[in-house]
Amino acid sequence: MTPPVKIARTDAALHPLLAERWSPRALDPGHELSTEQLTCLLEAARWAPSASNTQPWRFAVTLRGTAEHAAVLDALAPGNQVWAHAASALVVAAAETVAPDGAPRPWALYDTGQAVAHLSVQAEHEGLAVHQMGGFDRDRVRSVLAAPDSVEPLVVLAVGRRGDLSALPEPLAGRETEPRTRLPLDELLVGVDARAAEAA
Ligand SMILES: Cc1cc2nc3c(=O)[nH]c(=O)nc-3n(C[C@H](O)[C@H](O)[C@H](O)COP(=O)(O)O)c2cc1C
Image 1 (spheres, protein in one colour):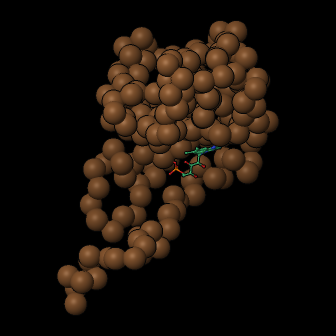
Image 2 (spheres, helix red, strand yellow; image 1 turned 45 degrees about the vertical axis):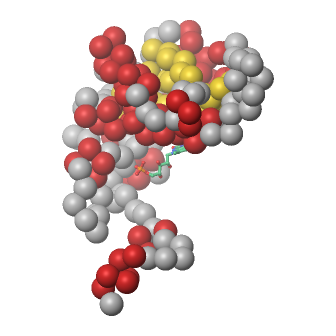
């Protein structure tokens, strides 16, 4: 079965890279990421904006078939291991929350999320998919990375090519074809809505 296309139902026309991005669990277990693709994704993250250009994001890239990929997979929540084993790469995204001189970096988590967003959109452009996971054992991932205390693992990214959803167990297979949903725009606006003033 070919991977489903899940286009967001938007109130305004979005760029296809945004409207068509979604987080699949069915990934192609035979797909391998090229060095060029990996570099391209990391480069997209590198050029994200950050507070005072501190660039606090850090990444650990593990490729399927390596001991490191197996170790990161093993640190995922069981519900994520069920499907993420097929990821071409498991990428730990972490934030350096304290600068080398000891100064705290209050925007480090925000900045790192933004870098991951850039990476995800670039992946879509490359015909790849990214599924972020917060469900993992932080201490175990930290020991796999041998990361200092100043570097905080935030998410593990399953990166790969969309695959055959019939390889997934239920209920995960069924979820792959469910429409993407979001809160209505009105619920995201607090206080002033300039659009309402314009309409009056
Ligand atoms: C910080 C974060 C943590 C997430 N953790 C998980 C996770 O542990 N397991 C999972 O299957 N999906 C996880 N997701 C994926 C979200 O469930 C998904 O992005 C959301 O449902 C919206 O779906 P879409 O990305 O397809 O639009 C996570 C996403 C983010 C941003």
